Length: 188
Image (cartoon, rainbow, N blue to C red; front, top):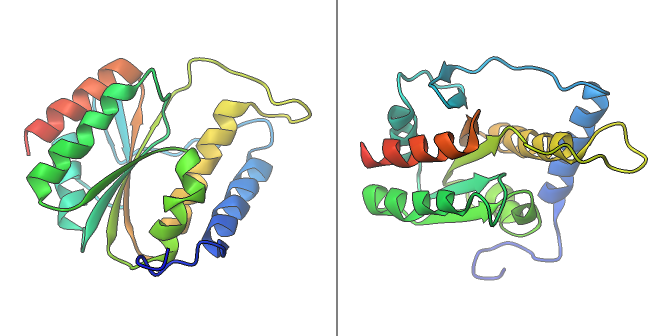
């Protein structure tokens, strides 16, 4: 923590992301709000304040908007969607920027604090997907798929309000979406 200038015992930004997650869950009640993507391809919907014409162009913008590093935050199934990790070394090679990869939501308590509370020089690529299984949470009126999406969107909101560039790629079809992202990064 010392070298990164982040106090490992103080997590105000983790708490902020949790509060945003809880606010989304309260608003959604039994149904998630639908947000229109700014771009759609066959298997990917893109959410951003930027307007581009292809997945490859959005990846290029993520690189161009970075002032120091790229962070890939994959809210996917670790062990099933492992191929998505191949995105990081290719982006790092093409951008010449340090590139991190984290499985969401588990990274929120570690590098998530650094993302929001550290130096303001990151550009963020968030990857979410339609969940194939709907597992209920005991005592809640939502399941794990809704909780994970709220965590992703809460973190995106926390980063965006700090002025960070955040582009979310939502995989409408997991396998095809991962293949499309990997193909797109090869075109930049």
